[in-house]
Image 1 (spheres, rainbow, N blue to C red):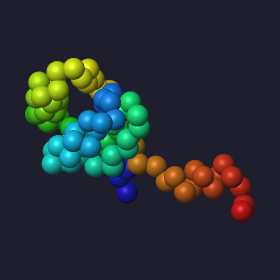
Image 2 (image 1 turned 60 degrees about the vertical axis):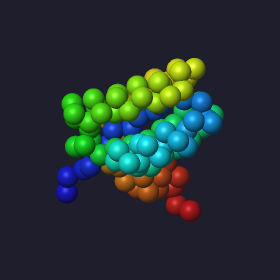
Image 3 (image 1 turned 90 degrees about the vertical axis):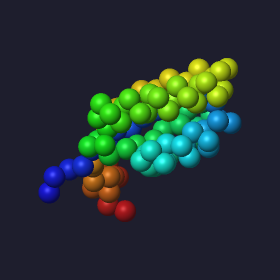
Image 4 (image 1 turned 135 degrees about the vertical axis):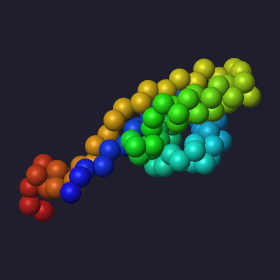
Length: 96
């Protein structure tokens, strides 16, 4: 079975704006949002992250910055591979 991969993107943005941005990104195809005080983390399937979608993503962030000019929005993408987290946890914790 082929392992799936995702692009995890950490967007540095203040908490009050995260819900709005998450809603826009959900329409764009992102899933799995995690919010913390200074960043919004989201994932998109790796096969959907290509030149065209990257341009659309950058355009969306540019429009968001125009709407809220005081924000300094930046992001970092990272590839995340499918992993059996239960198996990894069982190896680390031993028998319970």
